[in-house]
Image 1 (cartoon, helix red, strand yellow):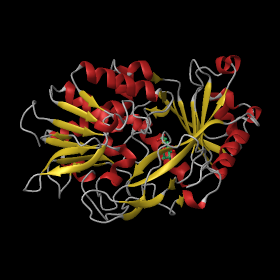
Image 2 (image 1 turned 60 degrees about the vertical axis):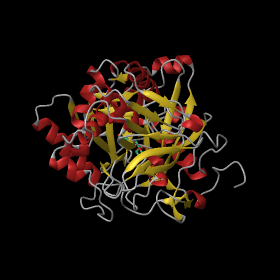
Image 3 (image 1 turned 90 degrees about the horizontal axis):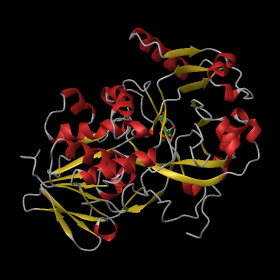
Image 4 (image 1 turned 90 degrees about the vertical axis):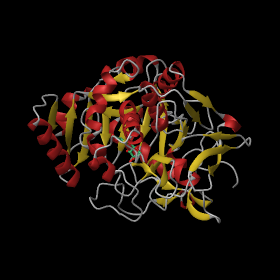
Length: 432
Ligand code: FSA
């Protein structure tokens, strides 16, 4: 999509997960003229990746056209990422013999079939507790699932910062604040996208524009309903230095019904807890480019701009339930740093990674569907491949522009419509 390595490439949302990985990979391939735009300096305050930790591991096989298969390898070998990968092991658990148990068991068999000796099937609470002694007091009768020794978690914010530092070292330019905040796209007379106008009136001219604005992508540019942004919830418990020390190196625990948590953050002793649910929309009016009138859609609500927002009462109850089930000795401890972070889902949970068919010159790199942080070291390479016309036909098809394509494989967030934040109580601490 570009003619040479001096092409001017602008990345909208370059302080987030997909954007910063794109900048890194383009810079590593020798592109000399990369301009990142973001509301915030990297790591962007609005990025879901700007978080103390995220789940990652070598068990995420097959995701995003197989890209996930290389991701953990990159986390533990690439010098930029290696310091932030915590190889403590990972439990992927479910309650009872349901579809998810069958899916996890199939994955286990597949991994074994590939000769992998780092995976195990845990068929009982006792088998789980052998891998995760910190769950000794947990009420997990009937739980089962997959153990993977390779994986655990990654220090998300630190990794994003390391990418930003490396990008700067490689010559990537960054603009933030008013001069990095998207206002509109600039088209030439043929309808080709040739620039981005930002809040202070500056027009950044480019040969190629990449939209990697995460949950804000569908609000900035009309994606014809292909991405829906939703909020997920977290809260922290402050552990004592002794508790934190005792829990050093615990494996990551994910359960599809109750949620997840992982090793306390080294240094601070913060334990992050998340419930699992289909996310919340936040319906409001917006006018994505190039629409001439407002449409009603889910619009993210920046936690940084609304720092006093907490979390819905029902989410707090869910997190308490996770604690009751798994960490009963922490019952009643204050839940601090309560907040929401925003992801954008596609129907089939695959990326939207293609040139916009109606806006040539604009590349879309979005639709993370909640699974992209673990791909931070590799996702940008796919965007760079797209830009260099090197994507395989399979990937090109998987990530194509596909309004109304639905969920043919049933792999997306899919299921029941998510609730809207306006229908739940307790999270908003100011009047609208
Ligand atoms: O192992 C994982 O991919 C965890 S993704 C984390 C998560 O909170 C999801 O559990 C949630 O459903 C949503 O997709 C946002 O990300």
